[in-house]
Image 1 (spheres, rainbow, N blue to C red):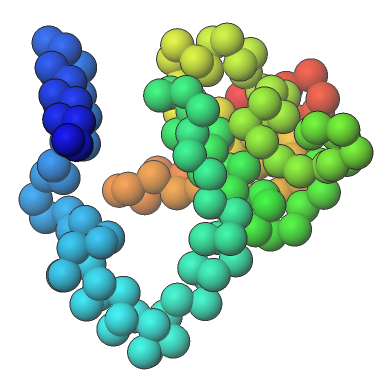
Image 2: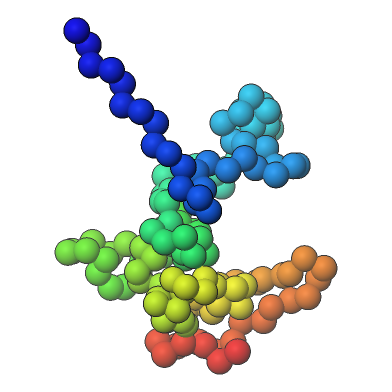
Length: 149
């Protein structure tokens, strides 16, 4: 006789699993998300998607969303970190994005737009960050020790 399936785990109070997106967000894999993707692909509007998707990574910590995003962008743009990630491999990972804010602090606080600009700048990019509403975030002077804000 076949074994009975294991019971579903009981949800822990205050913990989340696959929360639904708020309106007006559209889930990528939903029928509407697939339609939007197909439309954008057909119109030639997804040229930047393919270099990014081949670098996709899931953030290693809940507060590492900014670091994972920047790591994906740096790898998609072909920026050489100039130091090893693992073994002989030079590749961006969240662990290499430590020039502006201590990773322990990022793990508890995350990063804001100014931190993101600083990290992009000290990793060979020339970002132009613009806040919603038009307030520009100007990159500071950055070096291996961090950025002047």
